[in-house]
Length: 476
Image 1 (tube, rainbow, N blue to C red):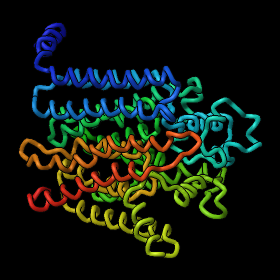
Image 2: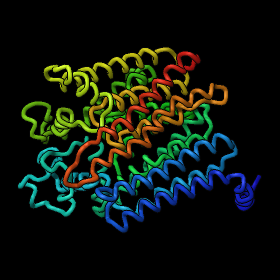
Image 3: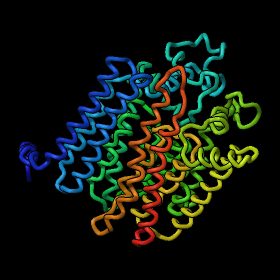
Image 4: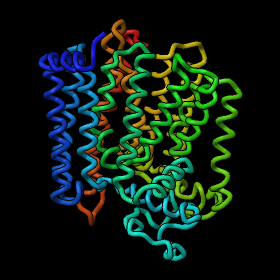
């Protein structure tokens, strides 16, 4: 049995065989250091600095793609190096303050209100009634004319952090990094359960979109993804016991009530869970929303004044339209050009119908007894439909799908053509950063059509190529 010192010595001697991974790690670390340097010099990563930010991001993404190729070419990957680089890149970005997105200030304000005994769903941020509770982050909150769009499980996290720790963005950045790395550990376990090489964790851990949106942006999606991955671990773990059986619905309820997206996994879980588990999930979800709705109202009807538990979400669903692909072209190029009355409403009905068709198809495919690897892959399908059909796509919306990408890759026995299932989303994770060019001019936020085309047309082309290959190659 090797001692710790002998293991370290062996790892050191093996480093020359890891030169490709070392080079890509150094390039990646240098790219994130470049991003941090931009922030330290200019105090922001957007506005006029956006092109420089994207240049460093492109370098990080090139290093990331190089790492993926290397770990596939060389199977003797030093996993400690993979994890060390992943942690190092995140630590570097903790030197920045979120500027590509200002969502973190809403998190701080919501947590502050909750700790004052107030509901973040009762008053918009700029309501005079809240002036007596004013703190500096309040002035930095976006969309101050409406209440919080974040659901109760997210609010519990916000309240806990702002009660126990300083009301600073760094607290949320560091916390989300911890959740993100814990998700990486769980994904590594899921890869083993699915019979896939552990080295594929690099697809998630080194993805620049994940690193930037979590370590710099502090997005609460990291909390949602952790709870979702924990749910899957509780379901698929070979060591699962009775406690795991009942914990899984609770963690999925927490994920759903952080952001609603994990609800899309239910068509698959419907066949994996007993009725008692499904009932527990429903009861806990309702129990968590009732107190908030009781204090501030549901916000499901009446004027769009942005109050109530779902008031901000109603505004989001009714008015938000940013960086979409299929929805935009359906609305603008097809329905509006055909002079269809209420083109936007019809476009929304059509994408909802398309999503329901996908969910129904996934539900039917999940009914037979399928293995764990196929189940994990099937769970990615509704998330893909969500990304393709949504009316608004910010870069961090892709993170939950990226957590499933390692499971879409082929085993040793499967056709290497299966990599084409991953390529559309790898490409999109690189291209979505271009949407930050919207903020190039702080006095004139506007979408750029060429950015939309660069983001979505190759993604759709690669997706179409995968569908054709899967059909003619017989890949499942």
